[in-house]
Amino acid sequence: MCEDSPPRKLLSLLGDEHVQTILSVTSEQPMSANELSDTCGISLPTVYRRLEELVEHDLLSEQNEIAPDGNHYKKYEATIERIGVRLHQGEFEVDIEDRSVTDAPERFNRLWDDIRGDDS
Image (cartoon, rainbow, N blue to C red; front, side, top):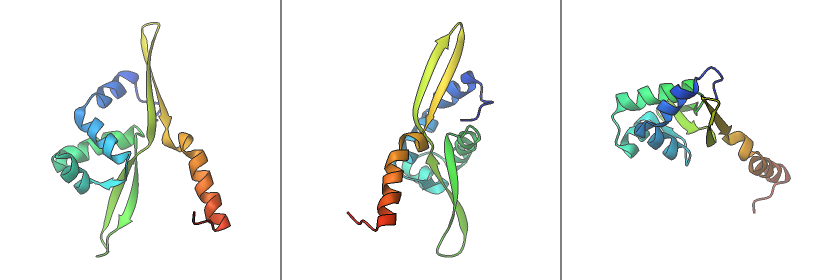
């Protein structure tokens, strides 16, 4: 998570229904902006605005893809697994757990299976 992100700004961002929808679907599979617009029923300009904010706050990652026709586009994937909010001495604290931490053992096992040549 972006360390410079004030907790109230993050909470406001996470309170947006479009943001919640985008995070939800991109936690299942990476999607392009066009796919998100079609799947979520959100206008493309709104999708792009939300994507920009989510990437800025490290809540989404973006990967460059190449289409069969040679054009480039980006796919987005949620980077978060869990969000915790704490109110401590009058201040909000937001703790975001990265997916790479929680799925590390599973990814390691897949990598090890690939090295060993296991197809099971």
